[in-house]
Length: 321
Image (tube, rainbow, N blue to C red):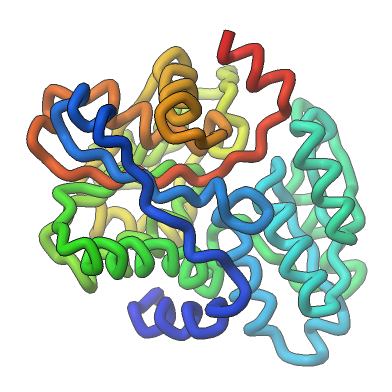
């Protein structure tokens, strides 16, 4: 199970490890939108995303023998960097399976943190199966991207920070919007937020055609997306909610948004021009959801978590022009 106490314990572990990322806002943007938009900027976190929170908490929970045997993981990039950085900080060997077409910045940074990067063809291979095989052969502990309670507790510290930052501002948020892939971040965030701010609604944001959590919430049961789609939001393109994350999210979330890629690019542009923040597409879906639903949010206070900023410069400049 995931509890608030687990998140509080993770916060103690992470106190001198992660950055307490700021809540940013633009008064001019708020005036134009008609509601107050606060940006939880996890793109400014170490490794460029929230992922180090859960990865560090998971690896820190291992015993000495498990750490000596190392860890294995699979990821399109952000989880890979989080695991690599966390493992490096604790002197633990890491083998990480990544798609060969992952953004170059994510491949390079993962290797620079000291992990052994093992690439595969995402059209033909199964990264989870490859990583599980490595773990079985080497005795390494598998650190999954979201379906793990220690991981969720670590990610939940971002939600705890939001609650504390809102309290410091004397503000009650009407809703928090969070990007969702497998659901680990929002499971931890919603558990932490609702323990402190029970009246705040927590909403999922996903790219259209990869809105498995939104559809699953509406149906009341975990559903898979139809295959054959692609998205620029490479960090959150999952086919089905996690086995452990979805039961939590079914209880804690108020609903979900599906956003078009044009709205994601527009959100990235606004984050850059108004707040000087560089966000990757998957990290900006929360802001895209807020901007594309502004009529329903008039007069409200909304927190949008930007989950990552690991984007290749050429791609980013191409989207901005």
